[in-house]
Image (cartoon, rainbow, N blue to C red):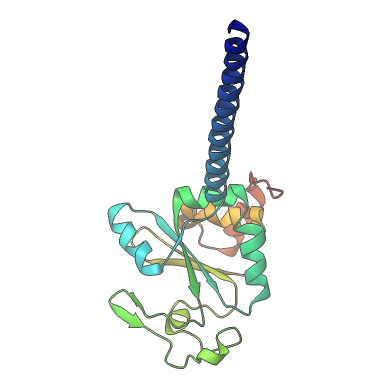
Length: 206
């Protein structure tokens, strides 16, 4: 009887250990999945609509960075893949800006500064090809894609900057506008001096 009891005891311990290990594995797996999700989210820019960004400014003033793109634009896709997923760019933008993605030839209706902008010439069958230009695109002075338009804390346009940029190239403009250094630059020569003195810190390989 003692021997039988001993066998069952051993079996019980083994069984209990297996159950504990299984629970432990599940807990570890859940933690890893949660961590991976958090990391993925931390490496994504918190994009929002233009109207959402303008509303957010009223509660917590920050500048706005607007990525003006089109569905057919190759450099726009490169900017999104190579620059807007760079860890340093993501962290800086999320901390200091409200980030907006705006389709320059899309069909959204947008209210800005008391005026409503639309795209009356939009054609659904051309949504992934060249389409009619949105009224807001023209109002912001955007004529090439991609263009990043920067706005101050009150939603006033600072400057549109056109063209594809790598992380360290966009870093210059992000910090130029976020710090308000742009207010002290009034000539091309002053900008050239700022450009030459600027020391990038973003890691382009991340």
